[in-house]
Amino acid sequence: MNRQTLIKNAKIVNEGKIVEGDILIEDQLIKSIDSSISVKSSDINVIDVEGNYVLPGMIDDQVHFREPGLTHKANIETESKAALAGGITSFIEMPNTSPQTTTVEKLEEKFAIAANSSYANYSFMFGGTNDNLDEILKVDTKTVAGLKLFLGSSTGNMLVDNPETIEKIFSSTDMVISVHCEDEATIRKNLAKHIAEFGDDIPMEKHPVIRSEEACYISSSKAIELAKKTGARLHVFHLSTGKETQLFSNKIPLKDKKITAEVCIHHLWFSDEDYKKKGSLIKWNPAVKKVSDRDQLLKALLDDRIDVIATDHAPHTMEEKNNPYTKAPSGGPLVQHALVALLEMHHQGKISIEKIVEKTAHNPAILFDVEKRGYIKEGYFADLVIANLQSPWTVNKSNILYKCGWSPFEGNTFKSRITHTFVNGQLAYNNFKVLDVKAGQRLTFNR
Image 1 (cartoon, rainbow, N blue to C red):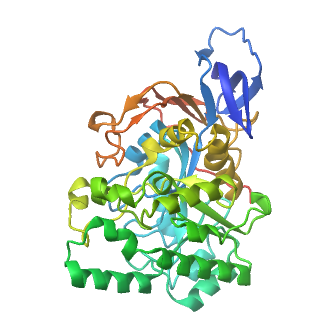
Image 2: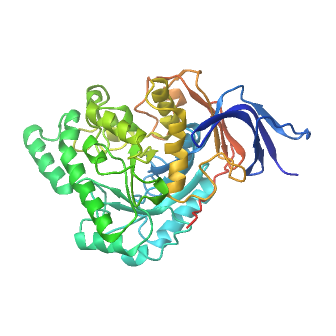
Image 3: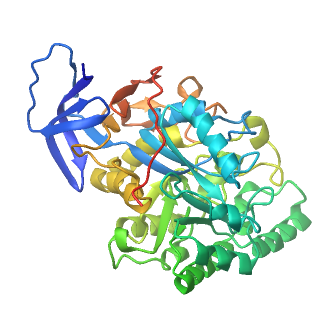
C-alpha cells in the first residue's frame, strides 16, 4: 500500500505565486496539487494547515557540519536535525573537515557517514588545493554538488593561492566552482597593524576593518576576471560588501549565467553596530560590515544580481568563541533560524515570501542542477515546509538544537514558526520536535 499524506487548505508558495489549495503526497513524491482534493482511503494522513503557508524546503548551498574530525562542535546528525527545524530540507556541505575532502576516497567516506546519519538530503563540495587537479578531474559531476576553492581564509592546505593552479582548475572543469573570496595579503597586513596596536585582544568591532571591503573586492574581482577569461562556471559565496554587488549582473536568467553570487543571512541581518553587544558570536569570515553594505546586499538580492541565500552555518563551541580576537574562531550556527529570520524580514516589509522561496529553493536548484527538488510540482520530491506567520516564539537555550548549544539569535522573538517539515514525503519535524525519521537522501544532479 502506498503511503499517502494530504495537506489541506494551504497557501502554496511556488514560482512567484501564492495559490490556495491542497497537496497530495504519495510515498516520496508530490502526486497532485489542486484547489481541493478528496481521497476516499481511510489510511491517509490528513493535515489541515488552516491557511498557513506551504513552501518548498530550503536548499542550503553552504554549510559546515564539522564531520569528520571536528565533531566536538557539530556532526551531520545534530546539524541536519537543526536544519529541518529551520525549514532546510537539503544541504551542501563544505570540504574543510578533518581529514579534508580533497580526494575522491575521502569524499565517498563522507557520503557514507551522511547515508547513515543525515535527517535531511545531502551533498558535499569537493575541495580544491594547489596540487590535487588529478583528483578534481575524477569527480562524478552527476553525484557531487560542485567544487569549493578557498581563495582566502582557510585551514590546513586548502588555501589555493597559486595563480597558475587557479587558472588551470578554472580551465579544466565544468563543475560549478564555488569560491571564498578574501585577499590574504591585505588581511595579513591589516592584522599585523592591529596586533601591533592591541596585542591579541583586538576589539571585535575591528574585524571588518581587518577583513576589509578592499580584501573582499580584490579577491572577488580577480576571480570574476579569471572566470570570464577561462569560461569557468563561477559561484561567489557569501558576498559581504555593497561594492562587490556591482560585479554581478541581472541582465540574463539564472540558468544562462556563468557567474553567480550568494548572500548569507547574517550579512542581511547584522551590521557592525552589533559587535558591541554580540562580540565574537557574530565574528564570521567574511566579516559582517556596515549598515550601508547590508542595505546594498539586500537591494542586489531583490534586483537579482545576487542569486541565492544561504547560511554558511559554521558552529564552534562557546569555549572557543570566548577567546580573545586572535584566537576566537570565525563562524556561527544558523540553519535552525534561517527561514524564520527571513520571514521576520518579510514582516518588516523588506522581502516578499515569493522572493524568499525563489532565493532559497528555486534558485539553488537551478544553479546546481538539483534533480526534482526546490519546487512544489507534481512528480517532484515532497520536500515541504509549513510555516505559521502569526505564532511568536523566543530563541533560548532550551529550544536550540545545535550541538554547540548557542545561537547569535538568542533572546530574539520571531513572529513566525516552522510547524512541519517533510523530507521525501515523510513528516520529519513537527512543532519543535524532530521526529525519529531519517528520510534524507543523497542529492542527484541533472548534468
